Image (cartoon, rainbow, N blue to C red; front, side):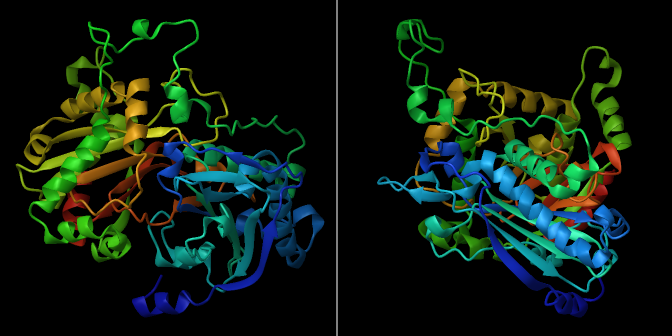
Length: 491
């Protein structure tokens, strides 16, 4: 997008033209929704920017309106669609609040979401590759000011920006305490389906999936209830003497070990442990850069063949498994981590069907925990992809109902932001959520890009709009490691 000077100039060229509160079309009686410890981990907003090129809107006279009228229609239709959606997904119109134990819960009080209209003379083509992080993207979302009062913080915010070329972006921020990835995907899909434009383009609408907002099984007191009619002595996971087997959450244990390892040789980490409130400044100082690497479908298939070798009939692996193994090996080597140092790969696991009883279809809360693999850097570099894949499978298999309970107990204390740890790789898998296919303005977006994560260790696995079997990896890297990582990644 030009020189650094040009980018700085462009950042000022987004003008806000309208800001409105959007209330549910049907108001619900106020009620308190008790959140789980998984919901309480991260109340910050997660942002996603959808890009729709001019062919999606400006070249189609919507409902026979002129293009001047189309601008108002785009904003108005999204507003009406959001009003309709909030009537069913009503917690999204609520506000977080702290109880007497300083734990977050959610007041479903119909206060509404915030929708912003903006415009810029910038042409979408000037942004270059939309899959790559761009400072300009930060101007395409609405970030409400947070003064430590959750009761005034909207849980859903969105900004519709018209570009100079006639294209649009829709930047959406959703509090992570409200939804996890699959639930956010369903919420935004429902919103798109309820928009006026989409409804008039499609005569036959699918019957929407009704969300289930109650956290149910994931509330800690539910875990402590034995199934009716079953003696506690007959429950699984007990020793021969009848005492309960203690299950630990490996992800939390490994994270603690990484922090202690860093503190032993890093004065900066010691300062963090003494004063965690400075974490945001420390993350900025860590100077990570965010790059998107495309792992093509062809390369994924080649890696699978390399992993399976002559065992194709007896051993197979998923695209996620081979991609995660490839990422971990590449990043560990590119970062030049000490051979004897512990390194850790953690990835999210959906527990909707792993808890007992299983969560209902349409569950809208957070239902992911982290599974974890820990080895030395030397072991990761020397291991084959197949060996690491087997470790990934072991970690995933360890996520049982008992693991989920142990994990939620471990994260139930006071929350703090994760310190910068070069030895940690976190994978958030979005490949089963094709966000770019959500048709707010057309059948699909040119791209759907998350903003740079405040936690640089997170790697997002995303679908690529032009390569349905490939994976786009958004990875946080140390500046000095980018060249080596790129060479090793593409082999």
